[in-house]
Length: 323
Image 1 (cartoon, rainbow, N blue to C red):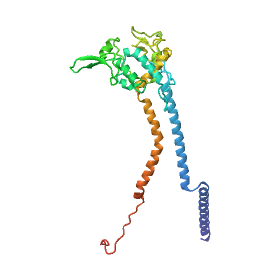
Image 2 (spheres, rainbow, N blue to C red; image 1 turned 45 degrees about the vertical axis):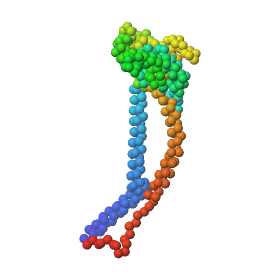
Image 3 (cartoon, one colour; image 1 turned 135 degrees about the vertical axis):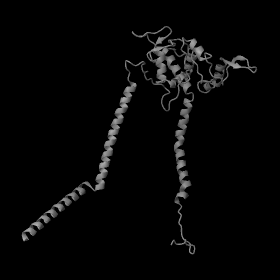
Image 4 (cartoon, helix red, strand yellow; image 1 turned 90 degrees about the horizontal axis):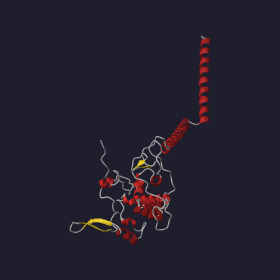
């Protein structure tokens, strides 16, 4: 009996020492690695960091893949991507080369206006942008505008600033009939309506070549790899010294294409320079407006946010006690 009690006491003593040693080692580990909350915070932070790294890697890889697919050229593609050119009006603080826009209008007037319209452009848009008011009035007066007189009769009169540039054809059917069934499109928004913008217009106007073997080009059409399908209904229109600029600039093929592409972009955004000037003014006034708004908000809301309401019971007017 005495031996059995000694054995039980020894076993209990051993278990107590083992538990104490385990608790001591756990306490030491907590002291080494911090509290449980700190351990959890480190684990969460590590997980977030790993997730952020993985997400950033996937984003970069996906963006690179999309860029490669977007800018690649396949042999099966029906058009060649236009090459990028350093246009002077690109950039947040860049403006149009007005001399180039004026020359581009000369190209449009002497070459493009025979088939293409500019239905969104009025002569008043030329004033104080690419022409003076007198020049714009003289330009409008040179055009014959179809109108109706007071008696309802159809007449032709000299243009005024409020008139838009005249159309070369009375309607689309007449335009298609005069161009082998393909109606020339309006050029007002063409610089923004086509993928590539100015680069596309320049490449299209300078990209006429002899058709390669295996491509059939019908009569009245031309081969241009920058046009979807490669076959375009408009033959080449610009040639070296095809026109004569008023300012004496050599009228090479590339110069004419560059100028008319710039003019077409100006037609799509006639208030391009004005918009950017207003943007600069707004950026200059934004810090001042922010300071005024911040201090004005603090002045208006100071009383509302700092006031306190304390409800006190008046002697003799205590609320009835609930029973």
